[in-house]
Image (tube, rainbow, N blue to C red):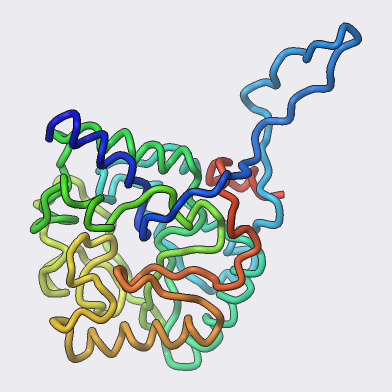
Length: 282
């Protein structure tokens, strides 16, 4: 991919969501010390200074019944390594979104399922990490699993990855359903041959999700929520997840069966930068 093409694509990059126009973001940063007597600011705070996310919670504190598999804190994702600013494998959300998700979990359990989250709040530095990845077209270690039938140069133009992302506003998440009680999930083995995320459930990565027709973060048209090629049980499972989430006030992005945004998000125009860590929660 040539330099011009890369620059064009970078404008679209940022993480599993439809590209959105960027409003002027209000992103919390380090607290600047008060001016000195001479009128100039004193030295910047130490790197360990904590940046808080206002009104955010750790999902497991609100509902420990919800399972998690925070892929961007691991090497098992489309980049192939842990992503910048994912310091801990936690789901951080605004409190209204977390409490709505607790209601979804109640309904899911009543039907013999549990929620499992893959990604929640995503810091802006993580989005920037995806942008940097876009500038390195030779880095395609995970193509055979996550985008086997799509050229990397098309991922952004086709809307599979976009910048900015609603995830950075704290009320959007990626999730699935698992049976309750959930089957065990084998740990990710980076030495094993990759299998396409579009392969049948028994062949692709052994995620303990119920069958949704593709794996998570599968950059393929078959991941579109209503893709007509997804039939039978997998189609029914997608509809079940959509019904459960819609009933609690979430909106699905129709290009990804796993992606939902809380309709009444408290920060619709704010993109945050604090890392994914318990210390970021105020």
